[in-house]
Image (cartoon, rainbow, N blue to C red; front, side, top):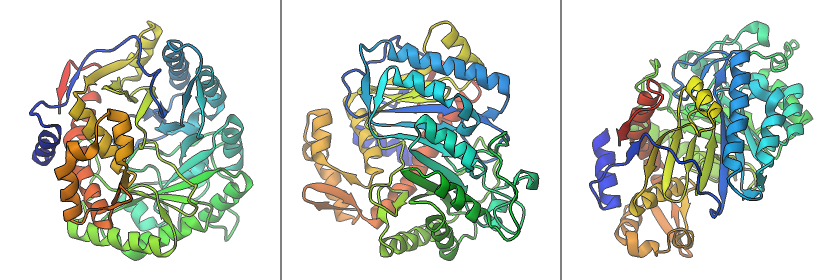
Length: 457
């Protein structure tokens, strides 16, 4: 697995030097002169832990969560106070974990953010389906949330069972005629939670869970309502995935995401991986169907019913991350906060940022990182690249651009490179190599060590 990513990294960075992360931190983060800066906040608490979820999370404990949020607010101030005035940022996304568990303290968190930042393009937050109730949605909207992403994963009981999910009937029923309800996506954004205001009212006879979602979403509207699905599950067919997407778009969603299932080595998941040929056929068919319905593909994994609907915490040139395991990407460096909640709170209590690892990019490394995640949006604009790096894309990567066009993975339109369906599949495919070679290794270590001395990727 790692050989492919190593060879690709060596070729594109023009050096044998690996990505080296060291146990060091900076007291001041140099973000003041960055354009299009984004924000991310991690809430790591869940009511139960999903076997296949790789993300930083712990079982919910009220006292521990409140102590964590106190530290989180302090971290926001520690970073924000180093900039004179308020820095304009594009967006703020909450992930986890189950961010809705912190709904009552969301206004405090956002007050801290707004003391230092001006958000221009909205606030997004991830939700478990059980959280999609009028009381919870009202709290979120009143606090200023404009976009929500609901971790459906599948409306179909057979795939809920594949993912090993269960949902207490006392909490409001299931997502089909059999027991089992969606918990989390491969991004780890939604784990089941049972919360005073989060549990849905019991279904009336004949009312479907999708109808309950639709009623709550109609009562409390948001700019973007995204629903997440996992594809490439064993035995999953085109008809299965299409039915899930149709249900989403007819029950309150104006945006959907379909994420490939990835088997992280440190999780306890036993779900088998779909063969490459079947996965490509499934993705090709569902992409063609979405296009035939007039849905707009705005990233590799997402389709929108309306052009203005969008939900993505990935496609940002620079971002600041707050909370345990959150990452920060600046012009020439990438930082990761400790995964340990106790160590995170201790460091913040000492007035020190909770960074556990930092890598300082050489220029070509930063270019590769930029191109990889910019391509996630399915298009790369050479003008944006040159504005960011001060050098022409075609001069720096002319052969690579010619090759992706020659292989049918991209086309050039009005000077902009746009990914073809073939290119989108191979991005999907390569992203899994990247995840298993880099992210899987790093997160596997960080789950065990709060502050490792060094990691090379």
